[in-house]
Length: 256
Length: 288
Image 1 (tube, each protein chain N blue to C red):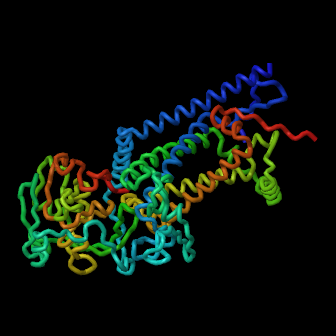
Image 2: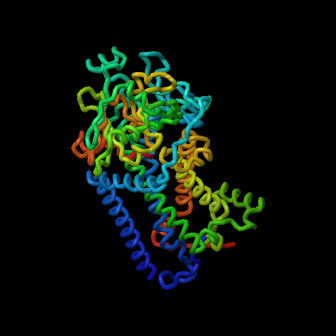
């Protein structure tokens, strides 16, 4: 009797252990499969939808006082675009630089730095959070993107604003670009900054013009902006995921 | 303590083996989902840490700012000397070659990296994929935690099994329990059917740590910061939140180490089975 029970119990133990090992191995194999990354990526939509629900009132990112600013604001990614065209613009102090605004707009525009400085300006001291984990606080002055988009006049089916940049991060592996949707494009703190810490925007930080989209991580804040294109889809741009780093696996929605 | 301390009839010989139904189904399922999420969050979290293995206090912090904790590599014996890994915590620096700062990868090659490849997901340096794992399992972890908390409030697990009773919090009782643990005298008989006070404090404590982990994780999100700026004030800024996230993770790892050691000491087959099938063999009282 006891013998029998022990046998049955042992059988159950062996069976349970084997079942757990089997489930574990199957789980490990499933998680290692290439398709599993697609499952993981579904979290981005949960995050986007949850945060958009929380941000529906368009609250501002925290703004700081001058005494809160980082003594040194780290420059990351491209710190000098190089290339003859950029060198010539830099040598001319960007007097010959022009920002193109086109795509799904009623009035395509070509704007000089002086044109931009004549538009309404916003100055904000905000925290910049890199996807790597560090943060720096700096002061930015520029034109609200919403103002430029209103001047250009969006088509009814416009959905995204794409920023085409002067820098190619890995030599010739593709120009930097980024995109935001209209929810972030029309946020009051989303500006095209031409000044940083009360001086002209330095080359290392994206001269002559960079995007500030304060409720998202640093790689969304495109530097060296040359062209703003309004689109209904970014599928045909770059590798189709909405940005340089997005094409390399990072989230399009970088609010976390 | 047991979820339902009902004697199990029909499967065992009487008196010799007392089986009790120790853990409810919801407790068992949420335990294992939690264990899975914890493991994957920890390993993908270390991958994320590797992208910038310095931790600061306050709102900002980057290369030129003084870190509170950092993992780094250096050649202390000059330019041609051996590269070594170091961990600095405040004013104290420790050499941690082989583990933190410098370690070997699966091919045996020396790598300059804060956390070793075997501890991260993926094992190679890949921040983008590490973040995908982290945020997917963060959602699952939070959903699972909410199920556990809601069920434990409704079925009385929290009140009856986890909250210490007043008599258990007396210094005499607590010291007695600590002394029993120090001597590795684990509860037997009736006492083994309930969590002892140190267990209760440990489980509630790790629960609190996990809540802190979720809140500090959310405090690192610029989107959440705009929506709920009070979280920045609660933790003293985004970089403080990041540092507390790391310290709380270290605390939960310490909990898991002790938890697993106690499972081994108390009888791993019986303990693990009780968390799978729910049934727990009560260790018999010592015969006088």
